[in-house]
Amino acid sequence: MSRKLIKSGMIVSVMTLLSRVLGLVRDVVVARLMGDGAAADVFFFANKIPNFLRRLFAEGAFAQAFIPVLTEVHQKGNETELKSFIAKISGTLGALVFVTSFIGVIASPVLSALFGAGWFIEWLQGSPDGDKYLLASTMLKITFPYLAFISLVGLSGAILNTLNQFAVAAFTPVLLNVCIISCAIVMADTFEQPAYALAWGVFIGGFVQLIFQLPFLYRAGLLVKPKWGWNDPNVVKVRTLMIPALFGVSVGQINLLFDTLIASFLVTGSISWLYYSDRLLEFPLGLFGIAIATVILPTLSRNHVANNPKAFSANIDWAFRMVCLLGIPAALGLGLMAKPILTVIFQRGAFTQETAVMASYSLTAYAFGLLSFMLVKVLAPGFYSRQDTKTPVKFGIWCMAANMVFNLLLAVPFGYIGLATATSLSATLNAGLLYFALHKQGVFALSKMSLLFILRILMASTAMGAVIVYFDVGDKFFHYTLVEQISQVATTIVMAVGVFVFTMALFGARPRHFRSSAE
Figure: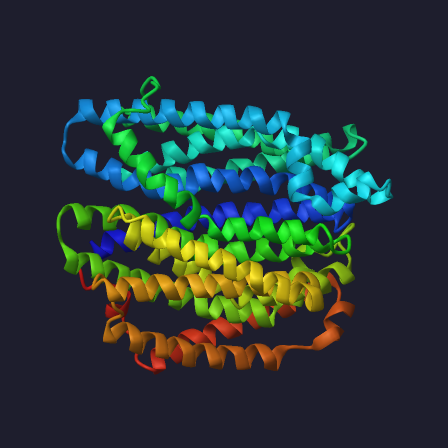
């Protein structure tokens, strides 16, 4: 099982790497086109709301509730029952998300006023900044249907993941990035406001992703005609698990929306600075944290169905260990190299040196919580795979309340940096609560091997951090040519990674530490 987990994790990581690289290319295009101006703030706002709902319906609560039930049905070996379940869950989810999308398009002015209250107030007062409210309302009409497409993409991806076909779902986001980049290049000059080209890229990207996955479902024999099945016993089980999970899994997304609401009252550029820093944070989070979480949920669900608590605990232990191995040095590297990395990737066109500096502050604050974001991704499946949604929901409520308090305490003195710091603090609280609950329930406790391994990671990361500090040239970096900047960043990263690997080996890290004891 350990080898299968590692192989599956590597497949997802490679596909995710391709997606994240293209995602960075997409963000470079966006940064060059709009920088951190008002239009950039509005586009990121208009894209965030349907993405928030996507993570509720598709990647978040739905996936966490659907996969354990699907695994249970699949393990029975009754193909007719499996196809019937998929037909009814797809018909029910499809109807709900299409209705939600339609309402979202119609109610876009209300949503813009609700989540962009600062802009709405400016519009009511006749201020020039009120134009951002009008632009957001229009742009939401274009981006909101993305919710319907991507929710069904999430459904088909969850089915394929349960069949251990991880590559297809992991590759699919590449198509979204290709569509946004293509629309930005081809359509930007056709609109008075180039941000509309990006919005249409989101819409087209959602449709293309859905069409791409259908042949793979057909090949697996699971492309069935959707049916309404609200009262089907398995659908009832999914929605019973999903309703509390809607809050528990997506607490981080709710926090980000709350950040957006507060940021609409801050200076122009705040939302953009948070977006660019968040995008860099998403690179290691998606590459490592989400990749590991993607393969661990079906595995834990099978362990639970097979009534194998030893394997269940060992597999969470492996996931925790791998997340620490990748998350701790990644967080330290992003925190220490925020300015040069943002400069090399984004500084061109409308994205200025000042934009890079401002975004670097929030990136450092986000990096503080990177490990916690990743741990939540692998600890939450420890509950959902056992069809326990109440515990994470309870913690989600506490963490959202804590995030609001942190925001109010930190946003006034520190602005958008305080918002990023508050998000990291609430994520850390969430990860801690999830771990201690699993420990208290007797489901999981870190093994001695993992504790010693994490100690090695901390020592190796300290050595790596010293290398980064040694190679830091300060503000001289901004006066380098692009080639010199790339060379400086690449040299620092290569040397830092080399020292990290060497120090890990020196302190006794061996191949057995990368395998699950469930093997």
